[in-house]
Image 1 (cartoon, rainbow, N blue to C red):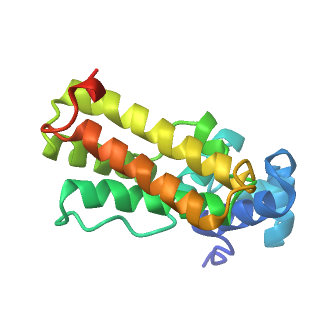
Image 2 (image 1 turned 180 degrees about the vertical axis):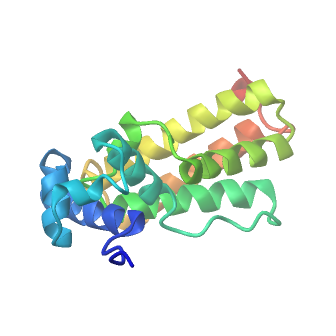
Amino acid sequence: MGRPAQISRPAVLTAALAVADERGLDALTMQAVAARLGVTAMALYRHVRDKDDLLDGLVEALLTEFPPPDPGLPWRERLAGTARAIRASAARHPAVFPLLLRRPAGTEQARRVRDGVLDALREAGLNDERAARAERLISTAVLGYAASEAAGRFDHHPQDVRDADFAHLLAVIGACVDPEGSRSCRG
């Protein structure tokens, strides 16, 4: 009978996130993750193919850190809930969060988050092409705001101002997506 596995993919990703949170993305190596887990770097390769797979896993971890919005909620609430979860993830992981600006959702779980946004946009009345474009633009706006805030760009503003700005961003997004919304938002 073989020896039971000491680690798993979720354990590897948790350790990788902790290393990157503590020391930054540049310090994230297979050796650093292995050391955190108390195993050899070679042991990681049963759970991640290579560093790119590890980084894709971190994107997944950031996007799935919070439960997805209830699919029974109206589309606006699902979009806003996803945006708020992404903002909270940025606040929890400011050193790692910029990875979402550099890497697409590459894993099945990460794509589910993107697909949830697409589903909400289709429910709002956008066809597939417009929903895909809107998802790219909305994701860029939300990720950009969250990354900027987490990096300290808005620290000279009180929290209530930052919260109001984010609420305004969500309102603008909702107005631009809504079929009854402003035509100037429809590209």
